[in-house]
Image (tube, rainbow, N blue to C red; front, side, top):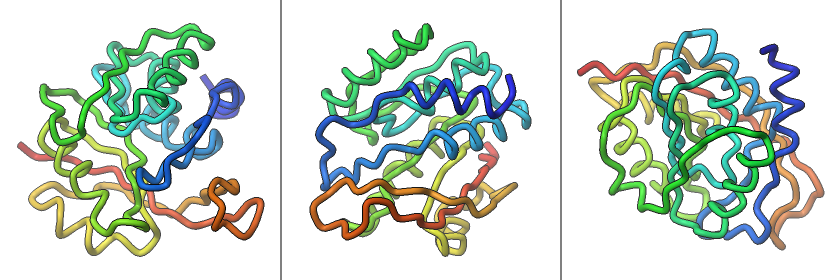
Length: 197
């Protein structure tokens, strides 16, 4: 499937009905989700088992399944978001398992983790439990972080290594009251991390 076709399908994914600030619930924009998923697909990382940590309304998990991942599980602590995620998977005709769980309690083993963790803008270090869980449970990780996080991530994930990283645009829609603009574009860094174990 071409990236543009995937993006168009992912535009069908409904976002958060009432996003929670403390959880930093920002919908991953469909162009960015399609870009990351297509990149992971081209690396051969979406053929087997995939998990989406902090899956929200399911855009990355659903996209992985659309691209042929054998088994996909999305984890989130917000039951309302998971309800929307289940409806989104149904709407797009894919089978994804959605589990309500604390990220720290995720266990088992998958080939690939996809995630758009909280950036820690509200509570510093909010992305760390996501990274720790992903490092513990997967072979390859695709993760979105604030631009300028590279040195921290490299240090935090050792002995795992970043094999690819690039800067992407993340259009943020006005989600919370303190947002001044209707839409703001921030720059993020996408990392592909290989966990050697």
